[in-house]
Image (tube, rainbow, N blue to C red):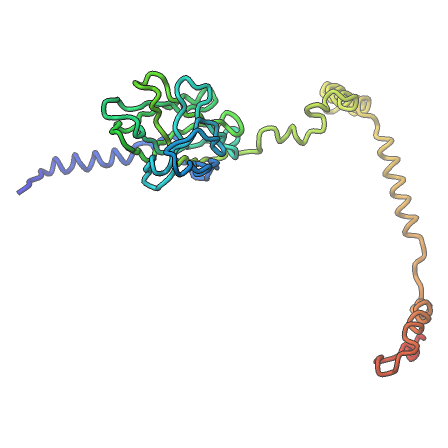
Length: 305
C-alpha cells in the first residue's frame, strides 16, 4: 500500500501554495477584445483543388494561405504560412483599434506544416512589434512529423508604442530547409486601453494647432500669451496693457442689453374681442355653405362673432 509521510504532505502543500503565489504573466490582465481582422484566415478561401496558394490575405500582408484540408487545425481553420526568409514581405497585420499606451496580449496557434518531416528540427520564428521596450518574442513549433502538429495558445504581450501597431511574424534562415515555413492560425488579441484622452486630443481642440499655427491671428495670440506670462498676477495695469481694457467687449454687451430692452418695450397686448374679430371673417368664409349637421357650434353662433 502506498505510504505518505506527514513531512512529504507538508512539502507538497507548501509547494502548491508557492505556485499559486507566483506573479501572473505580463498581459494576463488584458481582457477587452482587440480586433484582429481575418484572424482565422477564412478569407479568401483556398481553391478546392489546391492545398495552398499565394493569395492576398484579407487584412494581412503576407505570402499566402494553406487550405483547411492541409492545415488540419483542430477547429477546421485555414492557416497562413510564414514568408520565406529571403522575402521582403513577412506576414503581418495592423491592430487597428489599439491605441498608443494600451497593453496587448496576442494569441495564436502554430504548426511546422506537413512539409517538415521528422528529419528536421523544430521550426523557429519571431513575433515583433514597434517600440524599443517591446523585445521580439522567439517561438518554436512542435516537432516536425510530416503532418500537422499544432501547438494551441501561443501568446505575446506588449505595450503599444503607436496607434494601430503592426505585428509581424518572421521566419528566419537559421532553420534547416528554410523553404519549408511553419504556419499559424486562429490569431486573436485582448487589450487594456490606456487611461486618459487619446494622444493628440488636446491638439485637435486647439484652433492654433498644426497648419494653423503660422497664421497671423495665431501668431498674435502666441505673442500676447508670452507677454501676459511676464506680468505679475497682481498687476492689473500690466495685464490691461497686453490684453486691453475690454472696451470693445463691454460696448458689445451694452448694445445687446439695449436691444433686449427695446424689444421688451414693444406693446403686444390685445383684448380677446379684438383678436377674435380678425378670425371671425375667415372662419365664417370657410364654414358658409356647410349644412348645420357638419358643425357642432357654427362660428356665427360664437359669442365673439
